[in-house]
Amino acid sequence: MIQVLIERNIAAGMETTYEREARKVIQQTYQARGFISGETFRDIKRPNRYFVMSKWRTLQDWQNWQQSEERRSIIDQLNPILDERERVTVLQY
Image 1 (cartoon, rainbow, N blue to C red):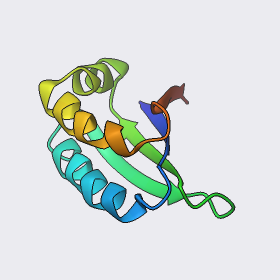
Image 2: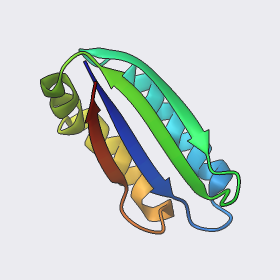
Image 3: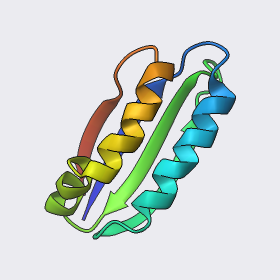
């Protein structure tokens, strides 16, 4: 089992748009093979900074989702509202 930490910095004033679009990502992720669970966090000191922590059965399951057309399509919609590219860290127990 692995966990994936995704950090996203949202452009000022775009938080509501991000939250709406991020829900689409979450809905699609629930259908991905190997997905176990996920949570979203918001930085208290920097409210435009979001973290997504998801748990996956295997690294291969995550990589399949990360490279899938479904995820890329949704991320392409998120990218214009990000201050910088998302950062992904894969963690293992």
